[in-house]
Amino acid sequence: MGYQQLAKDILSHVGGRENISGLVYCATRLRFNLADSQKADREGLKAKPGILTVVESGGQFQVVIGNHVQEVYHAVCQEAGLNDESTSRQESAKPAAEEKTGVMARLVDVISAIFAPFLGVMAASGILKGALALATVGGVLDTDSGTYKIWSAASDALFYFLPVILGYTAGKKFGGTPFITMIIGGALVHPTMIAAFQAASQPNAAPEYFLGIPVTFINYSSSVIPIIFAAWVSCWLEKYAGRLLHSTIKNIITPVVCIGITVPLTFLLIGPAATWLGQTLAHGYQAVYVFAPWLAGVVIGAFWQVFVIFGLHWGFVPLIFNNLSVLGHDTFMPLILPAVMGQVGACLGIFLRARDARLKMLAGSAATAGVFGITEPAIYGVTLPNRRSFIFASLGGAIGGAIIGFFGTRVFSFTISSIFTFAVVIPPAGIDMSVWGCIIGATLAFIIATILTLIAGLPAAARNIK
Image 1 (cartoon, rainbow, N blue to C red):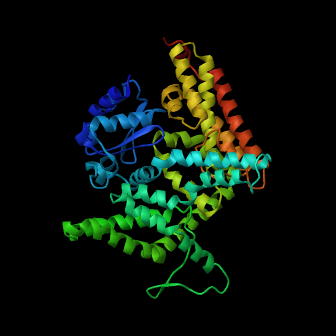
Image 2: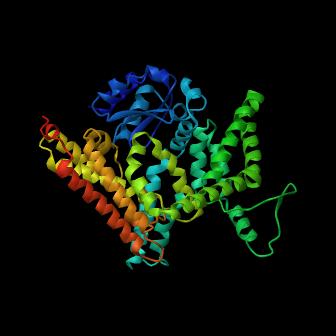
Image 3: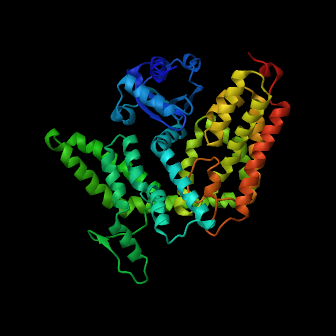
């Protein structure tokens, strides 16, 4: 089936163009905000070829597509006549059911809308950083060489200018002009402000003031929380300034008001408060993790794919980014890897055991996608329908997670939990036992899920489906 036909089917089953108040996509899902979710035909969508399943979570109506979600997204936008404004400015056209949506659901909705658009590029940057780490550890590249410096800049640019990128996506989500919030993010990492932070860090540094108010300079490069709060404030100001100002001056004066007020307010109040919050979250998580890292591995390894099913995994994304920003590393992401490898192993077990050609093809393609961190095809198409294989995958993930937690494996850059994770767990000092613990845990999760699925993961009726 072509993407245009699939797009037409999706539009007709979500209530048409007029029922769509917002649309974004992530690695495998179209995430709709619907004006009236009761108009959507869930069962009709699930029955369509090319759609794995439908999930309602985080205040969103999510259509799980799989690896070709980007092509389907563009086809839907083209078919419905949606543009960048209509797909992203979700705050200005809130779903009718939003008032009934819980706080956690709305939080997940905000997080997914802010982080999903650039997650692929973020993962690519992490892979480049990991490849550079491997090259330097292996003696292939010298850190003083021009080759290293250029690739290092390419891999580090997104992380350094993260407030600028988050400013853009947060501005779109909060219903403001994204270029205004992008400028606010740029101010946070402006060379002048970075230099002011470095000067303020020196002993006996003279204090700086803004209109007589002392300024606390903080290095906001790679920061996450400050710009999100600042973007919300800016969008709130933009909304009310737009109502008060005459249309003849609104387009010029509104940005002046937003930038002129929000940037100083961020340096004086929002930034320091958000930084304190981020540090509290990071150190709080670290305290819980250190108490029983193996237990954290068991829980995340066993239940991560359950979080994925309900779309709750997005709630952990800011934690990972915040840990990387505050601590310089993250111990949460490695615990996800065995859960992914467990799904890959279960799919391989079904591929080897099934006799039905269609099931073998589905399991094989799902296993391949899983190796690269995309597990929805495995979950919805293969392991969840064959419940025992899903349980075996979770069991393998729990055991592998316990091992990775025991060895205290950390990532030093963001990437999607996949085979590429091995590249970003290498410490600056070189390969140590935490790296080997990651390899052992992920491999064991894969082997356990594969063997158990081969032995008992596929009922006879499923093996012989024609």
